[in-house]
Length: 211
Length: 236
Image (tube, rainbow over all chains, first blue to last red):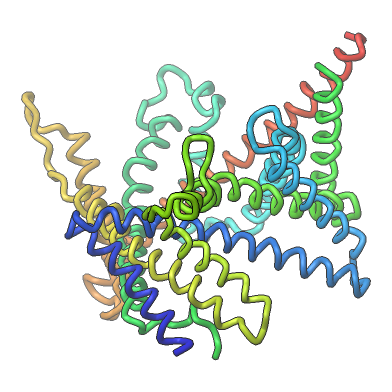
């Protein structure tokens, strides 16, 4: 029963959502359980945060590598969480100040750092050896050139419009990129639909974990 | 620039430099910023989800807010049953998730997980089928020859035809039930080319987005930090 009841819970929750599209009378029930879903998701985030704290506490307790930094992580967590829970998250609060001067600069620099690694990886991996890799390289180059002002500044007036980076970039995005992404989306959505069916019918049970 | 803003700008600048120091190699300054970032981000999400998910969907319906009484006070003081009382079920399902940390009772967490997975499966089933699969197929069923008042619009016709050929050939590439030989092999090869163009475009966009972030950080260091400090000190 430790596995069967959760499977029934999953089935009922999923089927109500699907049936709502065919039976509008079910909308109030569906909206209510979708709100419940948000509550459960919030608790899932708590589980993640608690797990992070537990792992770092163990790191400090057993004096593992980099344990002093783990103290910093715990202090950072409680500072931010308590600032938000006690003082609120509106503009002008301590939480807002911490977000503006800690979270935002660090997250944007982390992502900006990837520019270097992506460029370095591309330099090593991109070689126009085959038609496939040449197409990838050319598309990436044209899109990057078309995105920046210099891409169109150098184009002289007599240059054919269909060879300008701006025009080529738009065509690549509208035709090549749309076609590829569309095929991927259709394939992926069919995969999601079949996996959802497997979950609802109890064929896919990996989310229940080990007995 | 007031004192608190100046202090914040200095903290943000030092943390930015700490993270950028990783370009040299992994070092204690980077680790300092990395661990702080993870801790503060986790704290951010806990507080954010509490105010945006738990308060409006669990705490206010049950205990009330400035706008009105909650379901529990209504039941206890006036003996009135309010449908919002059912929110308790959501709270209990959420609480079951916390049982993951008690090994002997870890199985209880399956209720919360099963509910969220089942509901997510139901939601994705419909949303992906409607918004992605059917909408994308509908977007591909377009006229390969576009006729306007002045005759055939060659540009649009070519674009539409290429789009249809691209989608169909890329889908053929994803079809693995038959060996990719002959006509099917040729179509699959064409599909790979379209996919390569798509990946290249996605790569180009990603790189440009990252570069844009980097320019933003450099601009912050030069304008907000260095110039801002000099202005605050009255040096320029």
